[in-house]
Image (tube, rainbow over all chains, first blue to last red; front, side):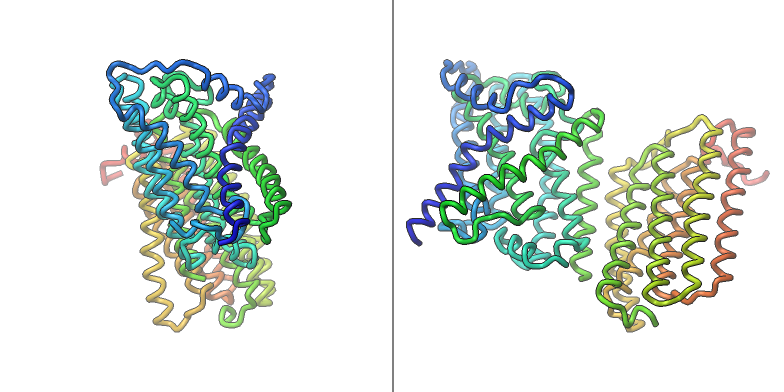
Length: 315
Length: 226
């Protein structure tokens, strides 16, 4: 374990921490531009965070200790996951053997689990509705995610994201195999669900159909800033897994030099802009559905994951 | 037999086309609108036509080119056009009474695919066809047949039922293209004309339903005597 590797590992976490609001801003700006509006600019999430950190905290009288620890735990979870996945380098760094893909998924889910509890904790109507909706989605999304992970494991014969990355870079036949393409499609649907961009989610927040926003409606000030930041980081982490492990496994630093790491970070932004364009296209082209249609895309994702497992069994 | 000495490229191309048509039958299973249903059917027929052209190219069966053109014309253009004319004549453009939600239908379809995989492993072992492409062809054939049966069972609109029947037939055709590509041309022609007659019969049935029952749902057909 050399100093450089430790620095790189810290760099991975810092990249996620600092670039996540930028990706959020870019996607929101694209969306506004597609709708022929001016848009708030790509740096708006940073300004929002800055503003929120300088505000006072107001806590509901009904809130318990859960309300206080949730933002901290959610933020810490999002700081832990980048250690486990290839953000900048395509080789494992110190402590990245702490957990495999399932471990990363577990930590990501822990964050949303606590946010669900906090939404229920204040016993406000909106928090309860948001939590129950989020749980309804999670009931179908999590098993599908596990099936996708099983598919990845069967494809690469390993549960480590680094192995999958190397396999896809080295082997074009695996990259274009039906098993891999189905996994990509299944994970893309899950990505939309987890980052709040399904056709059933509302594009403008703070309205009756909100899901994610409703759970954190009671928060204010720095606590709200932590939650918003962690949701931007969650989006960044899921995009990283989607790009660096599944779709675009190229452009990571092989040697671990400073220039390589910076180049990988720049490449990451380019990849995310590409994925963001597709996400914005889906969100704009597909008309909004009522909430109870939520099973259909998730069932499609499940079918794709099952087909991918069958495909990987055959080859 | 052709499939026992295929180049890797050909075998992966066949698998890709077969799996693409299986995916399109899933699209049909999940669509609520009859138009989308029809477009997915046409696309599936084109995929199968491409598959028979590919088999003809790699196995050097010149008559398969003719079959590919016939498939493209009959299954890909003529049958969808006839069904589209029936749909246009009706006021129904979606399945109104769903027995099974599209999402549940998708999950059941996935279970069917698993079942088909298990069966085709057994069948392939019995006939000593332990090649990937043979198992893929058998799996896709069986699961498209099962999905066709599922569509026939859970949908009432007469149009959906004829499309379910056609999917079933497409599955058999796809399997036969890969597994026994030297099938005589005459049989293919007979099957194509059979399909035309099926669609014509359903056109008559839809007309009958409209005049006597007042809707196009086959649930109205309860009496056995005419």
